Amino acid sequence: MSQNPVPHLTELLAGSPSNWGKWGANDEVGALNYLDAGQVLRGAAEIRSGKTFTLQVQIGHPHGDPAFPGPRGPATRVNIMDRGNYLSGTGTVFPGGLEFADDMIVMYLQGSSQYDALGHLWYGDQIYNGFPAESTSGRMAKASVLPIAEKGIAGRGILLDMARHRGKEYLDKGETFDHEDLMAAAAAQGCEIRPRDILLVRTGWLGYFYSTPREEFYEGFIEPGLTYSPELVEWFQKMEIPNLVTDTIANEVTTDPVSGVTLPLHNALMRNLGVTFAEIIALDALAADCAEDGQYTFLYTAAPLKVVDGTGAPVNPLVVK
Ligand code: UVW
Image (cartoon, rainbow, N blue to C red):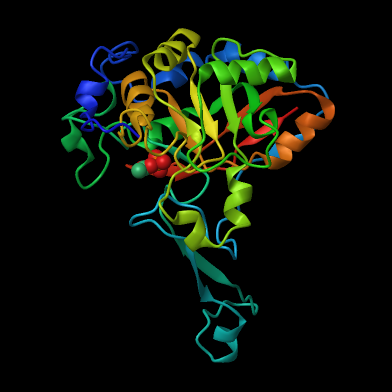
């Protein structure tokens, strides 16, 4: 870690590329605009066997759900109605003897497999596309997850298995990689990252989460992941990457080891370029299959829940190979 004072994001990202205004002053889906019908067909053209993979982690897993520490914690599922209500005479009675069970969940919208709203994170006074940061007050009036959910995501996905590439079950805490490493992993896998690809980056971190006591996992919380550099941001811009999908909680190394800044890529990529982030995405089963059949590209689809004014929304992405 640098001994220099930690710069403000305004300073760190001065001169960093921006897509504000590129798709109009009212745009709220950012780089997902790259995913036109042609991109959907390009993804569909990768389908060879018809194998399908769902990429959501289980909500309410006995280990507790993975979530960024702070206020966030595991989801709580509450039984509202069950057979017991009918036995005790408190169940809703319907003609014909119908009985039913009901429940609800209370959860952080970022507390499981999820898409971030583009306005969910910012620095200074503005969120994605220059909307005022005040538009997040009370409800996310601008750049919420809803427009992303209304659009949906479909295109050519490519898995970059960084853990396998480095010969590990999972990457270490704080272990970093960059766009050059992603390209090297693709080459080693026998494929290449193409413009407008949806990037699925596997660190093996969710496997580590579920096999590790929570106290140990969260101690000095730092994840492996991509690291900020101006070159990496330029590469995402040049490649017109619409969506970054990873099996970590934050999609980037939690604290940038060079600048000491927390989550700079959220700001350089999501706030400034409009790159959509999907986090806590289960990639192990897909990765095992890709290693077996050598096919690392596929149709990737995702439809986050349509949460009005939401800062994010749970999702169960579907891959078809
Ligand atoms: C925060 O919101 C802090 O992180 P994430 O987008 O990874 O959930």
